[in-house]
Structures are given as structure tokens and as C-alpha cells.
Image 1 (cartoon, rainbow, N blue to C red):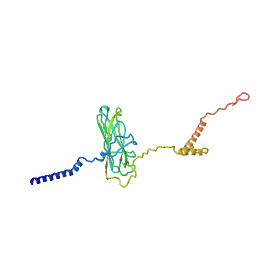
Image 2: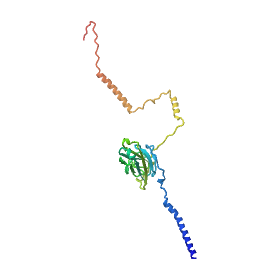
Image 3: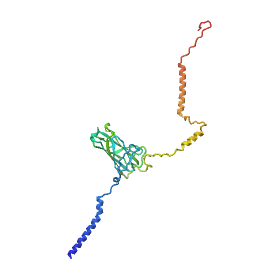
Image 4: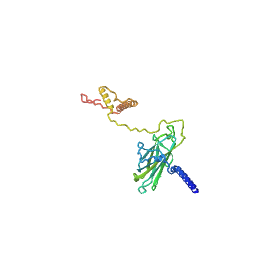
Length: 286
């Protein structure tokens, strides 16, 4: 009897332990496999534009990794909202030391949607890399984006922002050497959006309209030909220029110059000598 009771207690304990392990399974799985953050799920950007119009769009937290050449300009664009403080961090992997001929200076500039250069409050905006350095780090922390501001203030407003990376000083022999660029834009939100009492109607974004392809001749040519046919024999004053103050002063100046020229010529010309005619008797009389 005792043996049977002991076996029953052992079976009950085993079932309870199995139930505890099954219930703790999901918790252990949650701890060992955390869910990825939104920034990690974004695909890295491997391109960059060469001007404002061709700037490559990136999102805050999206990694940028690309290969380029020293001496090129790199442009990216991102969108900032009111209350955000954006930070740009760039790491440039320089060419091998054996290929370089001296130090190099780099610069990162940030422009708003109206292409106004924005000031950086922190970060190495114009660092210089020594001749033996393997990489150089650049950074720029923008001011907090405001909901609205006076036009003359130049404060950062919601809209599109452009990042430009370029080398400012470099030995001529080092132009075109391969390099690597890594960049990340991070945005920090804040509840304090100053100043209050205003609102920006539209974000500061340059409109870029591509145009349309015409498949047929525009009707303007036919209308123009018909108009010329109807007014071929009628007199038109379209060829005359519009009279303005400039034309009046030009005419007055021309008249004054003509009068001055005639008067000066009459005052400075030599008098003509009268040809003396001989008298009938052959003697000249004075």
C-alpha cells in the first residue's frame, strides 16, 4: 500500500512539473527572441543623389550604406515633423593609407525645404582626417522643428530636409579613390512645440513636377496660323516697342546731341575764302 501511494505521489509531482514547464515555455521564448524594432526592419539604402533634385529619400532610423569616390557630392532627404529634434551621424571609411597623399577635410550640411542652410547645435560638422586615419566621423544635431515661425527667423519648420556630404580639402592625387559611407538619421520627439498660437499651412517642400509627353500637335499652331491669315492685309502696330520713360529720355538725348554737334561744327569750322575775280582792265583792286 505504501509503495502504491508513493508511486501515485511521484506521478502527481511529475504531472505538475510538466504543466509548469509548458506554461513557462512561451515566457522563455519571449525572452530569448525579442521582436525587432521598426528601424531594424527597414531595408538599408545603398544609393545617394548628386544634387537637390536627385536626393535619395531616407526615413529616420533607416541605415545608409554605400560605396563612392572621394570628391563626389552625396545628397539625401528626409521628412521632419513639428516637435522633432533630428540628428545625423555619418562615418566615412577612407581609402587605404598607401593610396592617399595627405590629410582631408570633410563637411556635412543640412538644408530645409527652401534650401536654406540650417545651423547645427552639436556634432563634428567639418572634421579633418589625418593622412594616416582609417575613417572620419561627422555629425549634426538640428534645432527642434517648430510648428511655425516668422519668415525672417530661419527657424526649422516641418517639411523636407536635405543632407549633403562632401570633401572640402583634398590632395588632387586622391580624387576618385574608393571609399565607404555609412549614415543614419534619428528623430527624437518632444511634447514642447514652441511657439504656440500658430500653424504652418503647408510643409516646406519644393514642388517637383515632371511634365507630360505630348502625343499630338498642340492646337496652338493652328490657331496662330488662322489668326495670321485673317490679319495678313491689315495694319498692325505690334512691331512698335512700348513707349516708356527710357524711350523718352533716349529721344531727348539724341536731339540734344544733334544740336550740340551742329553748333560745335559751325563754331569750329574754317571760314571759306572768297575767290577774287580780276577786273576788266586786268588789275586786281582791293
